[in-house]
Length: 317
Image (cartoon, rainbow, N blue to C red; front, side, top):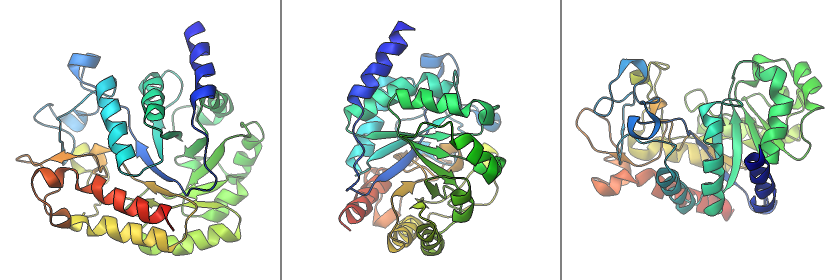
């Protein structure tokens, strides 16, 4: 208990202040991976009957191989890559108190802050979320988290969100994952984000953000490189990367919509194939070869390099 209290005090002191002037780029991040060497078992890499390390649940293969999200070296390297790509905030997946993502949260916070990144939380639909959310949010706020992204908010009605909002910390911003600004406004959310790169494309963002502005709701459209989740047993629908053209199209649409901030799906959701984390060219797996004309080692980091280009354009208007 004493260690937790000390960490919470440190969080309030060390958490970087949110910038009202600088438009933010935020990226969804998943600290849920494990290896036998570090964690005692494979976590996520073997989903849907796969057998790591040679056979992963992803259509792509990480450049450094399957890793543990408990490793300080791994998380430090990831935060360095995110910061170098011009990203301002890491939005870490969170599955409730005591979950693996909660246990690893202090490491994510420490390394993110060390690399001058803000930290938000994507509140996943964990059991009992509607009943414990007020206390959970107070806990996250005490750790230094300011931005909250609620995944699948329409599990509750807008009226139910209004009832709960009264007990939420007032110093946090709340974003609903939806393309319906009216639902977010009715539920007293501060903003919306789309997350899903299949349902929403760059052509949708101008309409969504225009509606959001009329309702005084922040608009944070989610750009992504594509989607491919069949090996993980996810949605069979896909969205091809088209050698980077899909990512460019979504960024173009986002910037044209004049958003409040831009969110990226994702840094490392390997199972759904939305990741921009470096990938290896390995037999039996898709790769980034061909993206913006790059091949080999240069292609491995192509999406991070392209993110730096787009983030700079967004930051400079």
